[in-house]
Length: 459
Image (cartoon, rainbow, N blue to C red):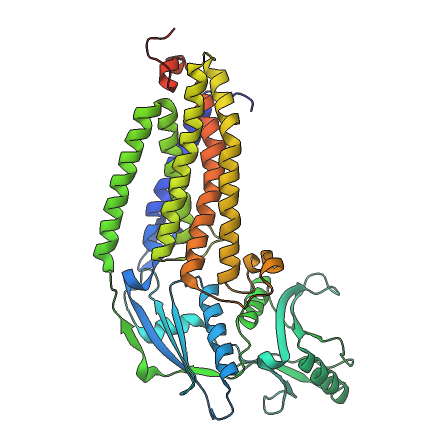
C-alpha cells in the first residue's frame, strides 16, 4: 500500500468518531410536534420481547373452517413467519393450533412505541395478502386463488415501454392449467386482480396465456411494485385470516429495561478494559485499534437501528447481542494479530515503515480467512433460518434445497449481527486501521520503535 499522508489519520479518525456519535445518538429535528429523523440511533433499535415486551395476537380463518386442512394451517404459519421476518421482526413466536384452526403470534413492540396499543401493533403485519384473479370487475367468480395457483411474484420493468413497472407472476401447474382455460374463455374480456377486498388491476385479456406466467400492470411506481411483489411472496394465503380483537393481549418483558442497562454498563466496562490493555501492550497500534473497534461497534449499531437507508430497523434479540459481542471479539483479535506482527518485526531489527508493512502483510491472511469463514457461516444461518425469498436463501439454495425451510428469528438475528460485524471488521479493522497507522507513523513524534512494541532504550 502507498504510504498514507499525514492528514489521513485525522480525517479517518474524525470520520469514525463522527459516525460513532451519529450511530449512537442519531440526528433529528422537531417541527412543532413532528419529528424529522435524518439518522437513526440506538434509541431506534427494536429490542426483543424479553427486554421490551410485546403483543400476542390470534389469527383465525374467516368463514367456515371445516375444509381447512393441517397443511393449510402450516402454510399460514409459515407465511406469518415470513411476514414477520420481512418486517425485520426477528424475535417473534408463531404457533399453530390445528384443532381450533388458529395461529398464535407473539412479537415485540416497535422502537419508540409509547401508546402500547395492541390493535395498532398488529396492523404492522400488513394485509393478509390473499391474491385472487376474478372474472369481470367484481370478485364473485374466482379464476385463480392463493398459494394453490400462484407460486411467486417478481417486480419487473415493462419491456414494451421501458419505463412502466409491473409484477410478473409465476403460476403453479394447477394455476397454469386454470389460467389457460380462463384466458381462452374470457378472450377480449376483463380479468380483475384483487389483493384481499381491494382491486389492484383490471386488464383485458388479449390472448390465450398458456406459459404459466401472468402480470399485474397499472400505474405503479418502482417502490409500489416491489412492495406488492414482496407482499405476494410473503404469502398468498390459502384462506383469508383475521385477528380476533377480543383476544389481543400485552406481553410483559421478562428481563426489562433494567437488564438492558446492566448489559450496557457491563459492555462499557469491558470495552474500557480492552482499550486500556491494547494501548498498554501495543502503544500506538493499540490506540489505532481502539479507534477501529469503536468504528466497528458503531457500524453494527447503525445496521441494526436503520441508520443506513438500505437497512430497516432490525430486532435485536439476545442471540443477536451474542453475535454482536462475538464479532467485536473478532475485531479485537484482528487488531491484536496485526499489532503482534508489527512488534515482532520491530524487535527483529526492521525499520518502523518496514515493520508496519510486514506486520499487516503477515497478519492479513489469518484475519481474512477467519472473517470470510464467519461470513460464510453467517450467510448459511441467515439462508437456512430466514425468509425463503431472501438473497441469503437464494445464496445457499444449492446446498439447502433438500431441506425444508425453518424460519427461526433468533438464529437469523445471530447470523445478521455476526455477518455485519465481520464485514465492518474487514473494512475498518484491516483497511482503515492500516491507513491510520501508516499516516501517524510519518510524524516525527511517532518515529520511535518503542511506540510500536520495541524496547524503549533501543536505538
